[in-house]
Length: 156
Image (tube, rainbow, N blue to C red; front, top):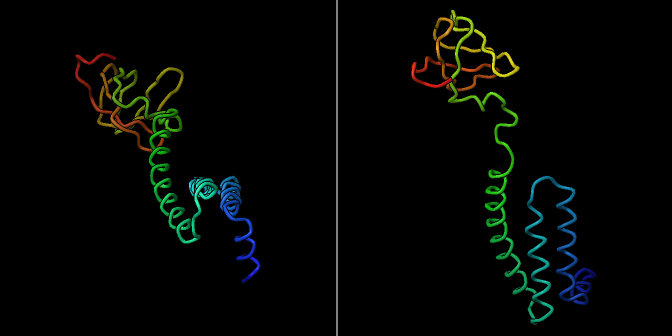
């Protein structure tokens, strides 16, 4: 019996706790949230092994199943939470203007022009339009707003 096997046999269920704590420690050092789920699973197996006599094969199977399930559920939960939290347009300021209607102060000629929104002047691109025309922002192309003519009934 090797030293590692003897150490695991002597520690019993606590070896799962040690593995879990090591994996949680790796989670701090590594980017992403991979080791978190394996660490939690190892601690759960260690806790279960404290109350139920498990062979190492059974404990390993339980650990693998718990790891897989917690990884899938945890990733979905974190994806859902991250999509709900924060401002998705924070790093793309212009995305907040998509769908909004503005009035051109200067003509849009040769497919380029400028548009003042709040305290920012944006470069815009779109069809040639005269000053005073209502435009709608349809998308963002780099640092430019792409616009089109809006209905005259649209509110700016």
